[in-house]
Image (cartoon, rainbow, N blue to C red; front, side):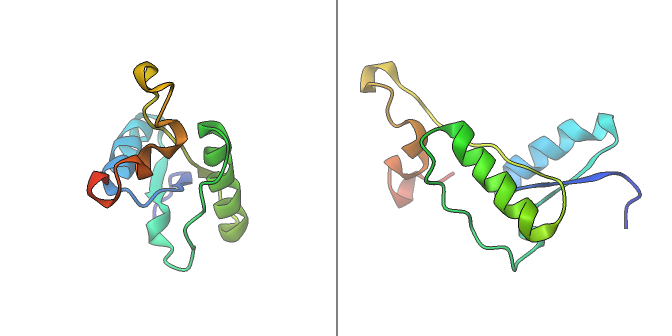
Length: 99
């Protein structure tokens, strides 16, 4: 068990977890992904903005774990597509478009 302060990232994306964990190292913070807690269900990203989805993911997981949790949500907003896919980026290309 680490003696560093710990924050949970509400993501199961190993690449994203690794990238953000690396950013936390200089600050003496251990970051772990929510996949460490298999009993925590996926959070439905049904907000109307990236910020709303991130806030929902962080608060729901924090309530379940009783720990500090951060989250993010991002996507592509293409002017030529009228801002699409926006918050629907992860679903825009279907299953073959997953990271």
